[in-house]
Length: 479
Image 1: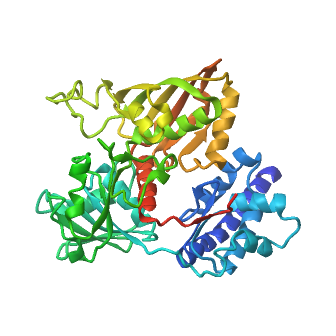
Image 2: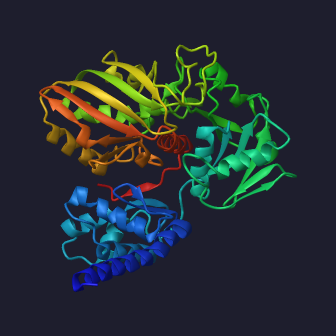
Image 3: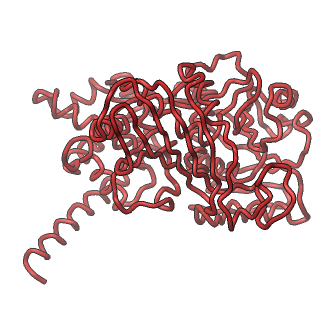
């Protein structure tokens, strides 16, 4: 081994060791104090040392260089000593602010000033955890369960799932589908089944399995569940009258639909119009995966460049409502084999954008092509802008939005020449802008947005559930 090679390996080993020292600090802050740490919006909880190193490297897109662990490790140590209350803390932003405005102050004194409201609060959250019920346990329902279990009951407690009994082995099969997934891989943890009590225990979260086909007749209070938020992921009822059936069941306070709502049901895209949810809104919708993917990017583009008109073409993975082989289907073209064909179909996402962003009313058209992949889709936004913009200007702006704006949880950005759809399986953002694919000519721009139409959308749904539950912790730094 050359001296240069040995030095490179030694440097990596030292950084890996420092990252490993951060893991117990991150874990203790989360489990003892309810503090969620992140680096420019990327959560650090339950991450490996290599994951932490990658997160520090991503900071170079914002700061021009990798975020040194020598800056973030002392911040975590100091936070651990402050006995904080519940909070969401971006340690990259704190490190940057300390460097720019600390003026030589001791790190602990700086952090006391920045985190003043929660210093010494000893894990206090200011809210009680809220019971959550999943009505339906399909693709989205199981991913929602994974995310809720991952959070360990903080803020939201998954208490039950409601399904129609499919067979004598129903409980075993439901648990198996939660444990193994052909797209998203194995469940990260342990799952046990108690058939006598009809429960699934996932990483210590005890989930009651309730069999029912009538949303109005379940007595959740009989299972110790009250004031619950029911997340209806069946798609069977999409208007107010249908969804309000849930409110007739004992123990239900609010209902969230994981599909576009019809009529006067509010369609919420978190990051865009979640503040439109009123206390009186007992029924709301989390819109569609495509609407969640494109609306934040459209808002960002409209805010900076103005959008006079646009067309949205979605290249969408096939879904369960298509046929595996050619057979009768009430919908046009969807009866043809999903695994063998590209299928032109309609999308309501273009019209649905205006429900979250009224300024886009009448400005968008849209269509969709279903393709033979099981997950991860793409939206191609062909936009007529109100002013000229270069590709570099658009990409620089969208990259900045993805890192530092209020939409950083919704928009991600990548400029690798080698990425393909499978690289975005498991993305927690609503959409990922592919910068190298951006096209610009005068006032016309074409922006390509990848999205995990299953997991990324499920993360958006959870954010809306948090809004309904009022369980968002304070975020730091404030600015």
